[in-house]
Image (cartoon, rainbow, N blue to C red; front, side):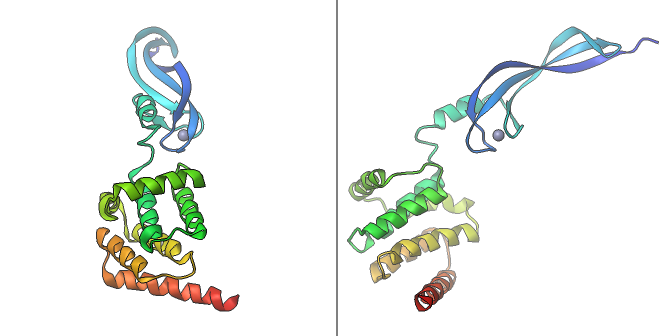
Length: 214
Ligand SMILES: [Zn+2]
């Protein structure tokens, strides 16, 4: 009996580094192709043509369409700053500016939040440059928040509001101008005033707890 059939044989076309969508960091990749072979007794003999191409992350073993290599190269510089990061960064700076003063504590709090929730860490100097940019541009606090709202769940919205409250409280007190800004953030994210009040009460309680335990 003659046993014949076909089999896909993988080979590496090229290798390099890319921003793996799964690992979310730069990792080595292998650009691979699959060639279908005619086999005789399970031995690949005659190539029948290309069956497919894919990019494999050598770290997580995830496979992606070859376009992923270029896609991430283009995005690397500015667009890598996702809409979410942009919204977070922009609104935190506006909260900081709400009371008309910039305190060192506020700067540190904003930097900490940006670096915690974003993929692009910034230094205090970079933050200062950004603050000036925000001051000249005068964009409304809802500008970027509105864009991310459709992809945020309630928890995601709460995280942003809690961060804003942390920035507002970092100079020792949350004043009216800051609360007004936070209310506008909640509106931009289509959050109900009851929900917002709930978060504020929760944060307040925690602040008082820390205060009395000190
Ligand atoms: Zn990966």
